[in-house]
Image 1 (cartoon, rainbow, N blue to C red):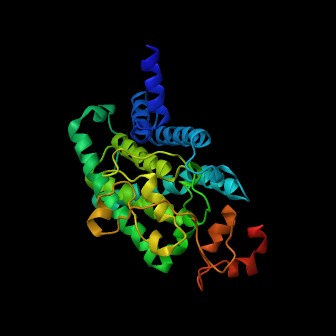
Image 2: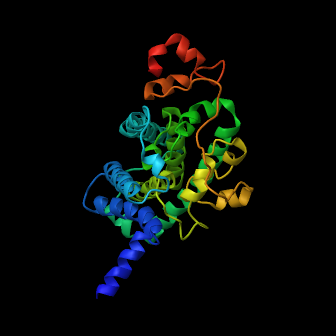
Image 3: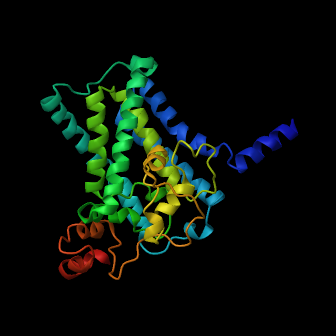
Length: 308
C-alpha cells in the first residue's frame, strides 16, 4: 500500500498526468456547473479562475524557471488588471455578435435545454465549430504578427518579460474583441448550444493558461494540443523564433502551414524595442492608438503619467 501511494505521488510530482488533467478538468468543471443550473458565462469564469489559481500554486511548487516567480516592476498589477477586466469586452462582443446573428442569419444562440450536454449530435456540432474557429484564430494570430495595424493591439500580450499563468489573459480589449467575435459568430453559424459553447470556450481558456504557465510540465499529447514547450518559443525576444507556433489550441494548423517549431526554451522573452514601453494597463490601452508609429512616444508626450 505504501509503495502504491509513493508511486502515485511520484507520478503526480513528475506531472506526467498533469498536462491532460490541467487541460480537461476546467471544461469538465464547467459542464458540471452548467448541469447544476449555473449560467454558462459564470461557469466558464469560475472554471478559468480556478485553473489560474491552481496553476499559480503549482508554479511556486514546481516552476519551469524559478526566476519567473520573482515579481519585478508593475507586471503583476498589470496582469491582475487584465484578468479582472477580461470578461467585459468578451461578454459585450458576444452579445453584439449574437444580435448581429439574429439580423444576418435569422437565428440566435438561444438558451437551450441541459439535455444538450448528453447529446452526441450536439457535441459533434460543437466540435466542428471549435475546429473551424480554431483555424480562424490561427489565421488572425498569424496576421497579428504580420500587419502593423493588428500588431499594435497584440503588442501588449508579448510585452511581459516572464511567462506565468497570470498573463495568459493579457490581451488588449480590441484583440479580445476580434477573438471573441470569431468564436461567437462561428458558434451561431453552426447552431452550437450555449452549454456546449461554454465547455469548448473553457477548453480554449485552459490551453491558454497552461501554455503560459511557469510549470515544469512536458505534455504527453503535444501532437494535438498546444503546450508550454511550443508557446515559450513564440514569446522569444528573437523575432525569427517568435514567428512560429501561432496555434491557439490545436497544433494541426502550425503543422499544416509549416510554422511549427521545436527547440530549447528561449533565455529571454518579451519584445525588443528602442522605445520605452508602457507598463500599466491603461498605458498599454493607449499605446495601441499611437497611429503614426508603434511605440510609446506619443503616449509619453500626451499622457506621461500613464507609464508611471
